[in-house]
Amino acid sequence: MPSDDGEPPSSFIHMDSPEHDRLRRMATRQFGPPHTPGLVTGLEGFLTATVGDLIDDLAGKERIDVVDDFAVPLPVTVTCHLLGVPREDEPRFHLWVNDIMSSIDYDPATDPKERLDKGVQAREDLYQCLGGLVERSHGRPGDGLLARLANDDGPDGRMTDADVVATARLLLIAGHETTANLITNGMLTLLRHPQILERLRGEPDLVVPLVEELLRYEPPVHIIPWRAAYSDVTVADTVIPGGSQVMLMLASGSRDPDRFHDPDRFDPDRRDNQHLGFGSGIHLCFGGPLARREAQIALGELVRRLDHPTLVADPPPYRRSPVLRGPIHLWVGQGDDGRGSRGR
Image 1 (cartoon, helix red, strand yellow):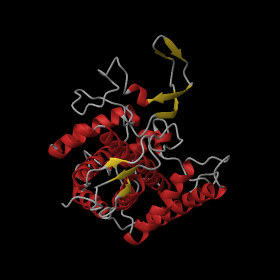
Image 2 (cartoon, one colour):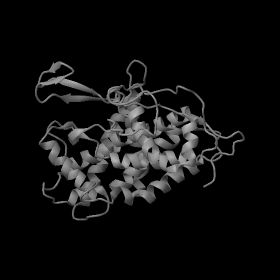
Image 3 (tube, helix red, strand yellow):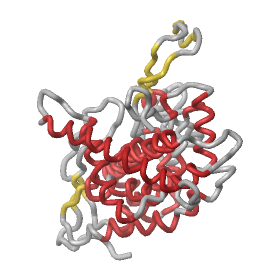
Image 4 (cartoon, one colour):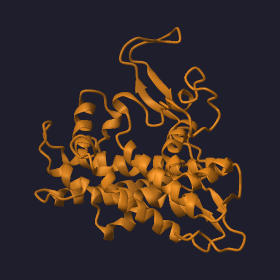
């Protein structure tokens, strides 16, 4: 499965057409409409139960960390379930993803080298484990995405094992950090706007446009740094020569005053909210529908069940990454008497 240089292959988000288009079609064929239209809705019960279990564990705590206690474990649990990872292997996946994400912000000037080494080892262990799961899936179709990709002979042929592993890694790592940041940024934004938080308690359906506004106002991905212009293109009277490396400032575009009225105001009632929170074009995030539903259920239940949540520190400490925007920790106090979360 490794490439010629011994490294695991890149996922298709780093590729250009036509190879990008072919692999993306093969992935989305198993991930959503029109071939598997019920994927996200079919996960509804599992998502709700998983969110409920995590909030149950917060009961009785006067102070919680929304990041470590909730937003980080949720997407790993959901993605493992989606991929079809055996339950006995899931704890290892949580450890690997945590070590990988911790190493992303590694600073050789201040951080122990052990932090970087653990991330490198976690990547190798994750790659090997996923490869083994894919190999064992051949000839044994199942409900998990790994098995479906490994056995699907669609119009574009069958994915190689290496590409199945790369796609699974994409969902685990890229999907993990972005979803965790979306949930954390969402809770932080709601606590900074208590009137909207209280309104959400009384209007549960508000969570759908609210998440869209979060994706515009405080997106988990601020920059896409690895794009190149296919040909000469003119933007705001400036010619970008073909082949030039460009950085796409998604967060800036989603606050463009020429496109959005009063762009620096958080407004869940905003109309025509065509934000760039999931990118656009052929590289539009194919996991977007699942991330949306995770965030909707997570924020709705947190607001409903936490007992008078309040920010302990504002602003919270943030990750150093200019690409991925989210707090390292989000400490929240709840209740005046330590009773913890609300009953269901």
